[in-house]
Length: 309
Ligand code: R2B
Ligand code: URA
Image 1 (cartoon, rainbow, N blue to C red):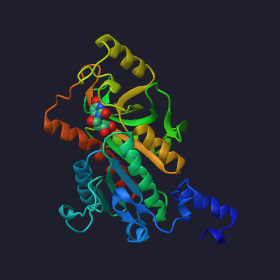
Image 2: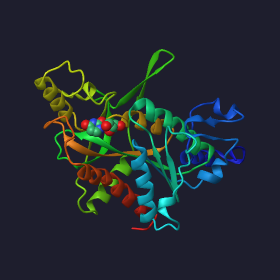
Image 3: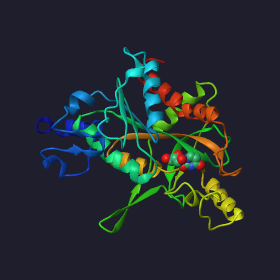
């Protein structure tokens, strides 16, 4: 296709298609997406995934299965949502469900886990020749000065020093990548939240850490090397830097999507207010309802984009 493109068309192609940033990939005869249990030789990826427009990722396999069932209902698609097949059933690393133009995938907890998934997902979208794809991370988080249940649309994903960057060690050296997200998608999501009831939503910065306990200033881990006052001082500094929630994947998610020309957004519900405590004490049913909020919001976005809402 590329050979027949004029300069302008080529630019258009680059803009719309999912780009991998690796010259070696094109020289490979087969690409095995090991953690998905898929391969370019054994699966017809353009046929299986070519119509994907929205990719939703989240930590838990069960939650991403429920999301797939939910979006199936919301889009009024034929067939039984209870019978959705896990495309990655050949592995238990990640689960993946396709519902019309929506792909729902789990990524596990933390940067290393989501990063492996994103390498293979971006290659999958590239091999499948997908165009104009928007990616969402739907997650949970700890709120910083927010009431439990508040949904945070991430403005900037920031690191432990509140910088909008992600550090990756490559060949023993640190490479720094920007974590800017798509402003347009974020404001469209905020607009969606105003059209829904019972989804209190804010835009703010999201801090990504490499640990749930000490890394997030918790006093309730197996180890704790700081005082209650020091914890509050750190959270206060985070708040002053615009941080409204803390989770464990946003920076690498933002950085990888950006490099590959994918529009992306992070939508996480705050399960607690970290100024008030560290343990997650809300009852199970309350937590389940909180976790549905990012799903309802993103589903509304998708339906609007498809002209169904
Ligand atoms: C939010 O919740 C998980 C930890 O409980 C982690 O994956 C994250 O980012
Ligand atoms: N996920 C996190 O990473 N932190 C929290 O406090 C809650 C959920």
